[in-house]
Amino acid sequence: MTQRERINTLNLPETNDILTINTLKKYKSELENELANILGYWQKNAIDKEFGGFYGKLNNSNRVFHEAPKGSVLNSRILWTFSAAYNLTGKEDYLHVAERAFQYIITHFIDKKNGGIYWSVDYHGNPLDTKKQIYALSFAIYGLSEFFLAAKNETAKELAIELYYLIVEHSYDKANGGYIEALTADWKEIKDLRLSEKDANEKKSMNTHLHVLEGFANLYRVWPHEELKQKIKELIHIFSDHIIDAKTNHLILFFDDEWNVKSNIVSYGHNIEAAWLILEAAEILANKQIIEKVKQQSLLIADASEEGLDEDGGLWYEFEMNKDHFVKEKHWWPQAEAMVGFFNAWQITGDEDYLQRSLNSWEFIKLHILDKKNGEWFWGVDENYQLMAADKVGLWKCPYHNGRACIELIKRMDNL
Image 1 (tube, rainbow, N blue to C red):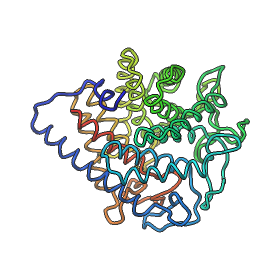
Image 2 (image 1 turned 120 degrees about the vertical axis):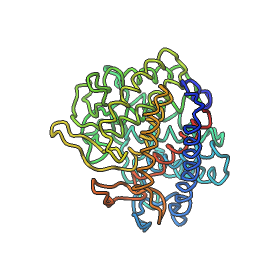
Image 3 (image 1 turned 180 degrees about the horizontal axis):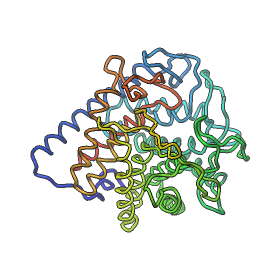
């Protein structure tokens, strides 16, 4: 299914309201400019010409940390973003960056002995953290699939399919469904399953399942295999049956292997991201019954996400239920996902309150998150709008959330 066909499965609002039309034209024009700014930043500042690939870390002042580790997730996200940007614009220089990311991944991140993707390498490109984090394999599938669409590179497609089979073989829970978080380099059980230090050390997480779904769905666009289709369907049902809290419509973050709940934190960014990503997967499958069910869930999740909206249009990071306390930080990526998630809700319903929330997110970003001096987006701000001291480029800071928000919304507005 093409992007245009996928978007057309939505009930697109048809409006003759001149104000709305002009607002959308302005929104689209600004996002086209911002996409060029984001990608231009990475082209200018992030390419490591000495050791290959991309730098592992830059700070807010664009200072390069030459010896910082390089993460597979960052490289896979760069691969996806520049491939998707090329697929949108046809600009050859974007494809060149995607090719650079692809070559670095196959040269340095592939575990040639055991198969799969390393979590990180050192700045020379030597293996550093060799565990098999299923989240990382999923992002590699996501990026490789998009690169195949851009470059028609059969090696990329074959590698994406190989990684899919490795996930199913080693991580899939045949007894309870879903996917175990992590394994050792040679695919054995591992004590520390965490994606990052702030995560719970549990067998299964919402975050990994969301991005397994994302990767599998993008792979299905280039490889519509029946087994893959069934795995995507199963993942959508896992979200309905286990991950989406039936009482609150928030996403539950962590589980044991039998899907017993192991967390009491609400992540507003993941909520609003899931609100449109799960629907995207359903649309790629083109199953009308699943699409209609997921549309309703998508709206419920979007409505629940509103609890995290501040009066300034920004989205708080998390809510700690046991403390009845907001984590009063506004990170860059939840704002980007809010732009798409609320726009998606407007497309489903035609309710312009949702469109306004998307616009409000963009206005907040322009005021507080865009680095108008040095380029790209800051990591985030605290409740007093003070900048957080965090990476501009890093293992987690990438052009994926903000670049994707621009790409996704431009595509959607192109089809209105």
